[in-house]
Length: 262
Image (tube, rainbow, N blue to C red; front, side, top):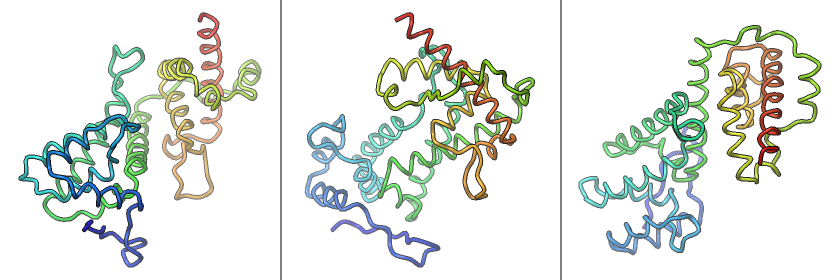
């Protein structure tokens, strides 16, 4: 029988968390396998492969198999490998340098997740229950939280000269109706690669703003509970918009130049 989750909604007095029906069925099927066969199934890649096992199901077995069992360590390694694929790569443009910001985000998210797994081995940790419901969603939230922390810390020591200076008419014209995250363009592999490189080359503040816009974080909000770019970076809305426009103008110029060379 599949072990139920223990966390409840609200302040702990609501309904119990429940896995997706497909995951429940998947776990029930996998529980009929022997340890070696289960391990082989969990190693199936990619997602389109026959017998692919969801990260939610792998986490379930990592939490329920005795840590002293040799298969537990192997399953844990598979889960960590899956987790690493969801985190930002630590290398910069071209893969020849290390991006300290990305490396810091990657380390924070991974360390926090491993800490949860270790704590759960000693005593059931309800914080992992959400990962069994939506593993990718939980990782995305942790990545966003870590990104906000890193951006805030970075912004304390880095600033642009004349960051509040009014943008020129040339910049206004360049960014009018321009969206570097146009879905049609993002479908093109070469465009995504060039965009990542162009963003990395921006000044730190502009790069941070563009990355947060890519994650659909609003510039500002009247709701104090909502994470905003202005709040994370400690900058006025006008400053954020000025730097966004300058960044977009630069991105447009660089991307159009690169496309013209292809």
